[in-house]
Image (cartoon, rainbow, N blue to C red; front, side, top):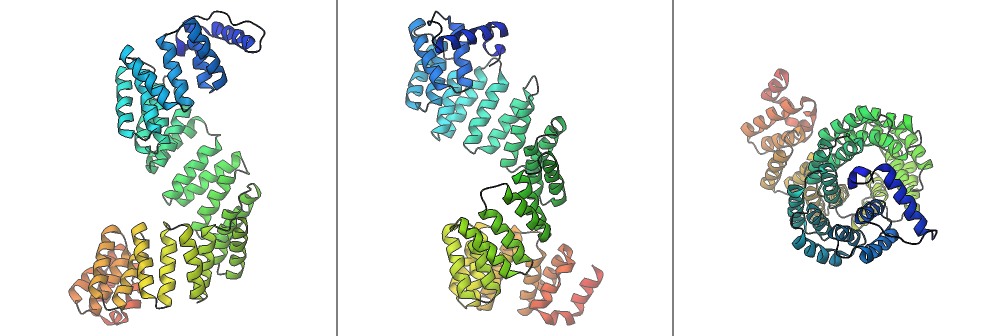
Length: 469
């Protein structure tokens, strides 16, 4: 607590007050008289460091020496809140609201309690009242509200209050800028978060967690080289920083640099007790390197650490599928789905394995569930459409792809498959229009059209579109 917080005690006076209080707590002095300002200062200090025993002692002392002092009761309400005594806090705040209707702290504390009680609408109303009534110290008020909203996963609104706290910070406390960057990342505004992290790192370039978070934002944006650079800065500061090692490994895996990714996953595991994830990631890299036997070893090691690690079960399921052991694949994929029913990749893998076994209803269920969970993968749409098309439901197949194309406007794959469907159904005009749109999006994926409709290679109009694009 700074002396500016109470507005009356100098640093020297506050240090002397703390020394005197500690002597009382150690039994070296009898409790003497404290005036209200001194008790306010002591309570504020111990509330800040969350020393509940000291707060209880001081509140009992205040009750004897200054019964009914509203400034003490405000701090009593804060204690009730921090101690989880919400009913007591609320009852006291209701009384204080009648006594001091213009005290912003009453409404601020009410809002904090309502956040915990999941009464978000009421909490936001009280936060607005607190701000309207405040006559200064806006940085602390905005920051308190931001932390509360972030704890309730109201990231967008929390981000707004962190920004206000930073803008109202007279000494430009860079911790506020870090909080703003982190909450903005949580809210999904990655470009803004990247900008805030850069602003923070310009002021403090030696915080490895900021570099890691910056790398994670770049990774989410699929700016993989930028991500690697940020992770490298974090590792320069702390060469055994597990999160940065793992983050860089994930990024290298996305760039299909699996050998180096494996090395980094292994390094990250040497510094962490939680091996299940790292072992599974190594297994996935070996699967991508077409080394299924080694991959399976790592998946099984992962399951030894955590028998319910769903990604490892999924990995084994995909190895079995790729080996045409579809019944085994379905067995492992169903186990993975039972543990993590909201993972679209598990449902999609289940769908393709069922399709190989001609379990068409189950395949349809897998594809449909995958799409509901994640409609942004063109492969999901095409697979579901192909299933409908192959079972004679051409209208449904086309409807699915038009819907998928609306959601995935940059997907050439969907357009090529639509073109192939239309040509197969002798609707040449629609087929040509879809083919033109697909070529504009990505000419290099045109082989997908010819795989489904090889007759297209003989069509002069198709040749002309490719030649002139």
